[in-house]
Each structure stands twice: as C-alpha cells, then as structure tokens.
Length: 103
Image 1 (cartoon, rainbow, N blue to C red):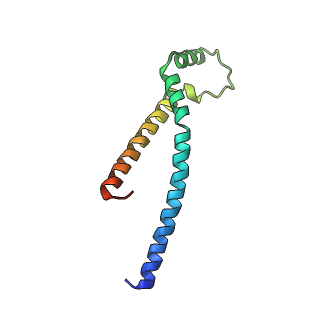
Image 2: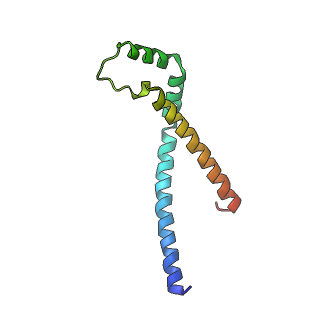
C-alpha cells in the first residue's frame, strides 16, 4: 500500500470512528437519562394502577381524546424488552472489546 493511500485510508477511519463515537456518546447519555422513566413505566405496568387504568379504559370511563399508548399491553412490554435487550447487547459488546484489549 502506498503511503498516501494508507494515510487517506486511516484518515477516513479516524473520521468515521470520531463521528460514530460522538453519536454513541450522545445516545448513551440520552439512554442513561431515560432509565428512571423506564423504571417508573415498569413499576406502573407491573402494578395495580395500570390494571385499573386499563380496565377503566375498556369500559369507556376515560376520555376518548386521551392518548393511551401506555395502556396497550404491547407498547410498554415491548419497550421494557427492548431496553433489556439493549443493555445485554452493550454488556456483550463491552466484554468483546475487553477481550481485544480495546479500552
């Protein structure tokens, strides 16, 4: 590989890696920031309040114009599952990187 070609290739790798790391850092910060919301949703979904709200919605006690995505059984469950899977994926990625000696 010629010197100029090598330098251009490494410059491209540097720029791509910098952009991804910056994006990941911002996303990780946002992900960390919403974990309190995820815990609150988990407690709500697994508790009696969600069941009561769900049942009241089923019998028409709630306003028709009320957004109620949180009362769908799939929306919260899917979010909690996705959150858990992303945590596992991050742990696996960190373990793989540690094996490679990348820190």
